Length: 437
Image: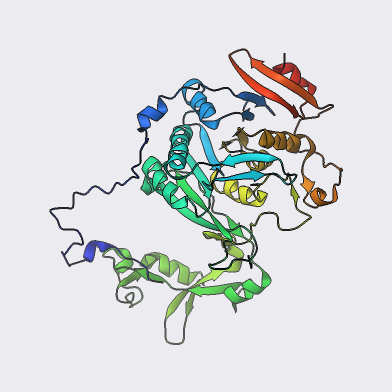
């Protein structure tokens, strides 16, 4: 694969775009009817009703209602501006479909398409950007239906300079029934930061013995340490120290040393330079100093619902928890705030809590909220339980200790009011006493 070099030495003055047209403005946007300006969006005040359910302590919260209302409430009334460290959302994909749980209960409608879907997402992304800390990141999980349109929207809102990655994930096994095209086994995650100073802890994978022998094939004769050889030079010419001669050698034409001559000498004195029979130097990189295989932007080992033994809630869009673990660990610290405003089955909230993060979850689906509360109180069930009607429960990971199943018609909180249709939730007595009349 070709590696780009600095364009400073480019001598051809011919431009692709004539100078009289070129203005130096690189911005672009999608235009469609009904597109609000960002100031218009931020003027929106909470109008609809929603339920606030506290889970662990005051920072960890679950909201039942429209996420635009809750995000607006956070922006206008709560102290969450520039406070959220990570946003992960798995929103509707714009498929114009209805999704059901494994027991055939309607979970949510994904019936917005075209410009209506784009503006639906854009208004929420505008509020999310305002809540995101300067060191924060956002991950938006989509499929091939609308990911490219939302990529342009995110370039507009977060700035194309803050685009950090386009992750391709293998979501399922091979689809052999596809007739006239390639099997659709991938989905995509857009990764943006708010600024250049975002938190980043590069994820790695453990080396297998087979891969170690392939990648680190050499044994140092003096120390017995396993190592590999890598070049000492990099593409592009330099006029500074890294472009100078070292031990009578210049870097190859069009390249420069990766280190200054002084640093190269120190490496050589430490036995970290391999000299070939014809005097070609290479650096020794030792396995015992390797932190693992850096994760790239194609994820093949994080599929959803691989077998009957995996533990799930049965919600239709439930994601692999190790996917969330990788993302959360990569861009946040313990004590940070994680938001998922399309909370679904609660996977993001669950994993964030296990990793010592604080969470805020929002969803407007009765089935989603039911699954989240069940997950918090009883834990997960093996996927096979949905087939075998196994009634055994796993102990939950959180503080809910439900004693009964309650039904309620209305819920009222003193600083604002809201209304819910009659539903059944597994909730502790303490929670009921706090929120029910």
